[in-house]
Length: 133
Figure (spheres, rainbow, N blue to C red):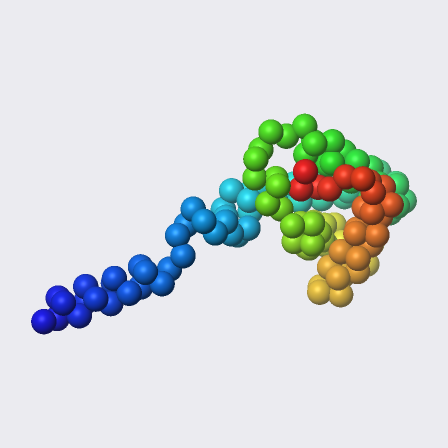
């Protein structure tokens, strides 16, 4: 009797769960890994440019263009699943953690500021492109 109820519960759970192949979730580990690589690459370029004396606008534009060029030539099919807002948030977190303190950005306020700044400059720099390809 216990086996019957256990089997029935398992059957119901599997029936209610959507099939993996039909619903693609952007939290897929390969998408997250690609976003991590992109945000690490961007942060490294941006922080290096700031340390080399570039203005924040120059560093931002340079890092966006260099990162966009890398993504444009990437054959990774996962890039189409990246949401611009999620990527902007991850880039902002990475930059604030890596070098934000050196130009006064810390904590959630720093991340929020950098994200809006990033999105503003990104739209001006590459209006016809999208990081996610």
